Length: 603
Image (tube, rainbow, N blue to C red; front, side, top):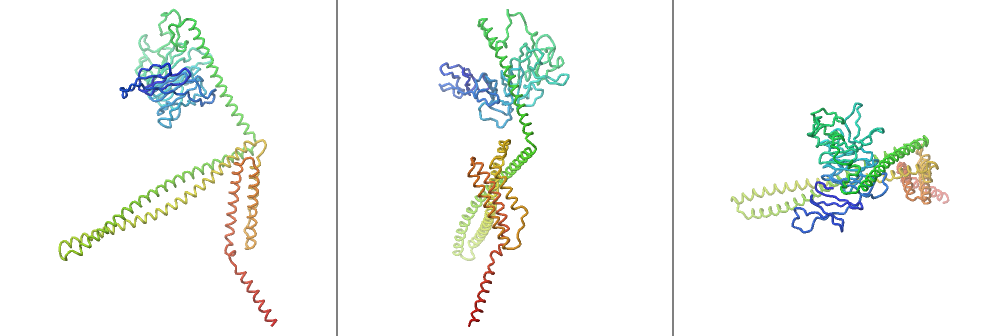
């Protein structure tokens, strides 16, 4: 298929050949399966033609794909985008996505250039694709048409003129019951030949033909099309679905039937000729038996595609039922487990919110720190410039002072030198004042930089702790899901027991009012926290999951450090009494007095 500024051809093995040159005439090199194109106008003097690139088939990243890579069976190009179809009914797009012509939400003007599946059509079996300038069409195995991309001319046929970034159904105008029927949809008891068998796209227009020979159009092609109801020329088939009055312009944004079987001339050929029955292949000189065989193959292929469509729908229904059963099973696990799961999810959400807040703070601190550094660089540069100017002014002042000493008193030269020296002194004073101001600003910037650096380091440490807690909590959640039937594992049980021990040990404890009793209490608390650390280390070393054990131990270590800090704060209250050694000296003086009295008694 040729696009606006490129051309693509398929190889027999399903690979694609792309020529990024300008439009021209292309011929196949049978020895290499390349496209040999004419050189561009700017390269007209070069002898070598513009060579094509060999592109592999895209990866099928959809739910029901049977193979990683599939054979490409159709490729279409727009102005700056492309669309391809694989033999598994998967549609992939690449290129420009400004108008949503790739069938997904636009992120960048140009994505990575690799074809990616249109995920909203993964439950459909696509049999044909078409591409306009900035829009795409897709025909399903059930005979329905989807469209997406640019829609300013109504080329999507969905009833409005807004661009669509996701595939939309091409729909007829609402009927009496206010229903918009998709183009090609047939009721179970309806005419199966009314299904769409082929689609095509122009620059800003779209067309479709049904198996019963109906031809529909919408978009810019219908801009000047009138519903005349006459028998010749551009006329409206009165039995069609459009309800536009005769002589009125037909709506561009709705499918409009321009031909049906009764509109064609008949009895021009000896037998019936159907392009759709031949799979859109023109075989002028093929024998009759070959034609019949091709018709059988086309019909077999359509039946297979229809069965694949049904199987995909059944798979989707099975997946939905399985998901519903899993939800019901999770609800029957018990109220306690449900409450624990909700509490766990709430904790994870809270930690993620705190991490997001700290990330924003860190980003702000880093920007402020960078601003301080830039301001410091600017201040240093200005101070250096002012220092050089001050040196030059001082040298100039010395020169003029020397000339003033040598000048005669009362002369005009001496007066001019006095005025010049006064101006230089003013410049020197201004230079010194500006330099002192910059020095003060630099000092303030240094203080602000230190403050920001300390705050940044603090927030980073908080982020590290929260990230570690989040990993631990997520690990607990995974462990809880994996051990629903058999209960919690050893690590989770250890963490709960040690946390309960710490809570029971410190809960409701009152600080002693006597120094000795308070010191004994603090010593007991330190021994208890040390025993918790030893217990956690022993279980972690004996665990078969070292990473989980390390996270559990780190979480428990945080609790131990927290209570240890509280214990140290309580100990600071007795710091004065702890450093008071007067009682030892008083006891020593008392023993010395007693010994002196006893010696006097003996004498």
